[in-house]
Amino acid sequence: MEPDSEEMESEYESEEVEEDVPLMEPSKDAIYNAEGLHEKLEDIAWPKDIDWIQKLSIDVNLERDIDVNDDLAREMAFYTQALEGTRQAFGRLQSMAIPFLRPPDYYAEMVKSDSHMVKVKGKLLFEKKKLEEAEERRKAREAKRIAKEVQAEKLKERAKQKKHEIESVKKWRKQRQNGGTGGSKVDLDFGFEEGEGFERPKKMRPGVAPGDRSGGNARHAGKFGKGSGKGGKSREYRNTKFGHGGKKGLKRQNNAESANDIRGFNKGTAQANKKRKR
Amino acid sequence: MGKKRKQAEMEPHSTEKVEKEAPLRPQRTLLGWKEMSKNGEPLSSPVFRNKEKVLVTSSRRIIYRYRHLMLNIVSLLPHCKKDSKVESKASKGGTLNELVELRNCSCGLFFECRKQKDLYLWMAKCSNGPSVKFLVNAVHTMEELKLTGNHLKCSRPILTFSTNFDMKPHWQLLKEMITQIFGTPKDHKKTKPFYDHVFAFSILDDHIWFRNYQISVPHNEIDKVDRGGLDKMTLVEVGPRFCLNPIKIFGGSFGGQTLYENPLYISPNQIRALGKRKKAGKYAKKIKAKKKRKMHEESNPLEPDEFAGIWKE
Image 1: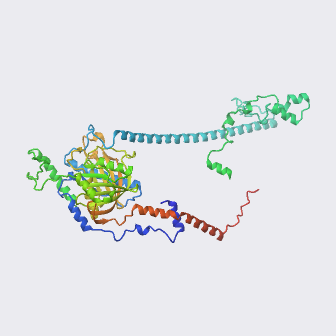
Image 2: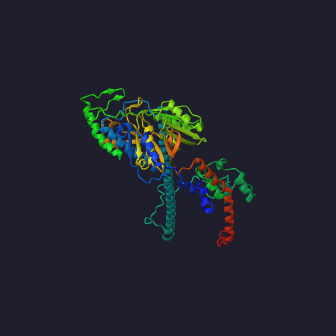
Image 3: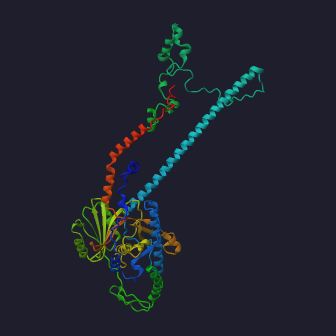
């Protein structure tokens, strides 16, 4: 029975609901011959006074109202029944002073063969390994997440510092304009001392078009442009595109930033694709 | 009730026996030791000896899963004999009874597979005892890797029954049959003298559930088995698992007068038919649902959305 079909039925079908209900009720005309059963029981039963050791049977009270469909609860009930029964049985065996536990050096044929038990062990090990691997993966993911956060924090920090520096430079300039030389009173904290200030960024220079092979030189003073005197805008542009200067290969190569840039790619999940389509 | 009284008289009896054993050896008979009563005289009643033998067979065209279940049961019962498959039960009880008698057995377990999916189990006390027909559900064989226990091959099982076996006459009868069939006779030649597994028979939801557990007691506790050692005892499931749904109890073996009929029993054929009937109306239902939806939409149309064009600019 599929849940959806059942659901459908309950939603839409009111006139022909549940034909199986009458079947689930106990049928009235079922035979129950209690006397006959008792008679048969008397017939086949062993004599009442036989030793318990012949039967080895124990009655254990099973707790009430166990949900049959709840696998865990059901199995637990059986387990407790068996365990309780075993306890009682062992108590009795002990009182009879019969050795009943198998000594560790007693080897005999088992119900399951050794090769089968090897398989069982392999399965257990495999499951353990799987669990461990999952755990490892989870940890790695967590670590990655944390690293990302840390990185973001760092970037923020850096931006903040930069802003602060620029501001301080501005302040210093203003002060110089206003009050001449600040002298010793002006607090210079550019961090020039640390050697950060004059570092040139190694990436692309600002203000240079991405296709510019001259690295921006042509715009200021193109060799051709100045020499011929003819230079119009188009010449300039063509110079930047085809002319000398700069390395040709570089603009095609990845640098550290562009390699990490995944904006050009799909995010990968189908969900994202769907969204984009919409 | 009977059990309690027995237990009460058992304990003094057994201790007495231990004390008596030393001075005078009991007489030997062909069948073992002659039992002594408390006065040292042989008991008047003949010595009880469990001589049950079980014939285990199956019908033809049994599928592998159920065949494995049968083989597992064979491996659990040292006192059973396995016979070759029997042609389906067309000729009914007669042949089976003959077969059981031919093999000198007193009980029969007959696994009947129908339609390559349903397994019925016949449990019968032969010649004139009662017989039961069960539907077998929820079969798990011993080969499954999630059942990790293992125990000695022919050791005697401890049988545990839930107390609701004593509630009704038919359960009582079933309990007696199960003890006789599944309990290994005490002095059977194949048995091993230790107890390392336990069968659990429980009635839940009017079904008999069978479980087989290995008893594992920690190794260093084996020498001194006091209460502490027993408390640390754990059980590991060995398998097989199955669930028996009694259908009918008959007076004779493999047939005869019906003594009990399960009022709640629905045959698997009926269940399947019901399922099919439920599925049959799927298309019609779909059409109906669509129509209904359409009507519903027409009868209460959507209001024009005031924010419809808000993102257009």
